[in-house]
Length: 239
Image 1: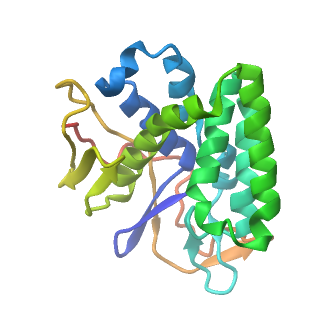
Image 2: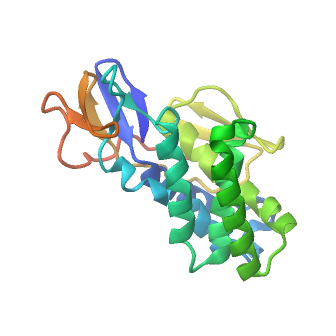
């Protein structure tokens, strides 16, 4: 779950919805000869589905049992963060190259835990999954690492928009993304002059203390969570 604190309210965006937006963004990427890549379809599938392991987790907010505060995807317990990735990779098993790209994404985003013994089983399992799916796809690891740029680019651009990050975001040392008001601008332009509509479903809840139920899952202490996503919170264009 992506959680934006807007003072008296929290704006919630699920990880799968963020990933779907990333896929829509990268479908317009014109730089790096991406439009003619023989693996474009598999890469775009990986971008759009890279967070599909979060579906069950994001069905309800994760609650910190001591403070009663909602936890986002960065601060969710290790056990939750480690479990979503094997699940997400295997959901793409019918498209092995996409599965391998999502495994690579998991390895990249958690690289800071490489020296943590508690994370070693996770890295071992994800590396084995990557190797297995790459073998099925008959593609070299070096090719995957080059193609992974597109997964990372889509993820970062969507996260910047969904989190309303105001700091400049660098991509591969070649591109910079800046969020200005509700417009996300990438320079130099990788979209061939195309403007991309950005919108994402969201839910709004009161910024309150929540009551946790079992394994840090929970429901609000007050009736503050609408039963369905409410519209779209923003729109923007690139560039």
